[in-house]
Length: 298
Image (cartoon, rainbow, N blue to C red):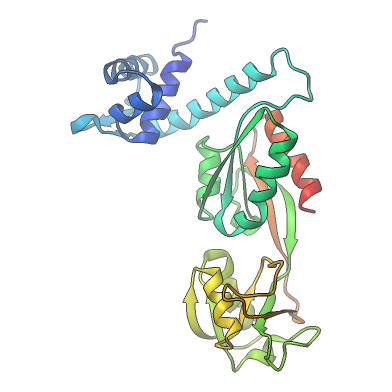
């Protein structure tokens, strides 16, 4: 049975979805706006759905059916890309483009080795990173913008498979001259009367819950989504904080020393996972990434 569409039509569809207008998509695809518009009209006729709501200045907004079509188109083009690069190559050859999503707070710990050691090990592979908030990663995987992504296991919705790549137990940071800074571990009760500097991102807001789970009330002094500001305030003795990811250097952005102290209370470790959509055959690119993570991050 003959295909009802071409890969070029799918490429135009994705370009318009990404760029928001036919004119911008045409420039990206090195085609004329007329050719892109005609191609999409033909694609709509063949699929029997309306993909876009066209507006003035050739702007285009995806319909719900169009959003589903774009997600499917990304997967089709990814499979076509895999076929093109795998044909005639050995099973050890990894080529093409691998798009990986990453939760912003995890990026400093995971992306550098990915763009360094992993990319160096596979010189024919192009690695692209989509970085953003926690909910962006599963959405980007679901709609085909990424093949896989890094996020916390607690943020993983249904319909995904994952592999644990790191485990981190929450810990306390204190000013280096704090009376508890030299302790082997601290109880949260020891800090009950002190101000908490809250790292204000979804994954870290559990700091207040940790305190409350110990039967205490958190005295929040300041909220910030800037981790370096949080660490700098703590280094100056303005309060303490509870973090998940461990910094390799116990110095604030200003160069002031910080004490990182384990928490004695029973607190579960936070798991970082590499996730992908369930029921989808993994490309060799993604399989290679999983193998790399198992060795590099554990």
